[in-house]
Length: 257
Image (cartoon, rainbow, N blue to C red):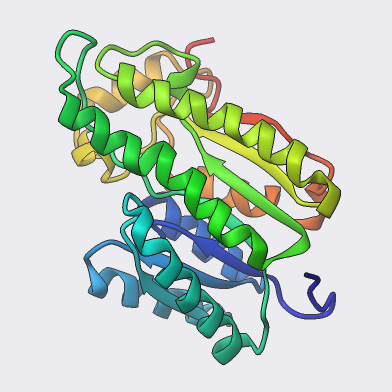
């Protein structure tokens, strides 16, 4: 499938109602990109995100999705098709940001099978099969960003299962770039460092001591904020960065060098 080169770009962002997903949506909207965002439960947050997207002059649509429920993906794909047709009079989209994730801390000795399966379903299996479901709707020349993590490079106690899945996601990203290259579709993994959001219960955002600790091991001397990530992803998805492909890009201010 191909898209009209003169039409605005359209992005799908999972977990786009809050945190880094929402920040990315807003930065893309500022570039004129339309956004379909997913949310798990909080419709109010999703509607607020759509309003913010539209404040910047772009179109936004919020669709409910549990990214850990593969059986829900056919219905979601059908909803995406309807949204593309009704909102943009298109049958394709251009950019996919697999941002939705879940996190259960635990050392190797303490991780339970239940916690492992929960993280696996959302952080790896869900990304794999949702991408598989959506790529047929992606325009040739499209772009994919998979959200990884700085803990695939830095070993931080309590992250063994989460980091292992994010590491697998980075391998998946390279294979996507290889297998989808014949359609001109690029794929990269973005690995944020320690960012002040509500992810993981908002510990870093709410703890001044944690922020000081992160700042002490970061070359630029502070913890990250959502604008550091959303702006970078929007730039990565722009035409000026179209030749960046199959890369893991850490966005951490020089953390633990």
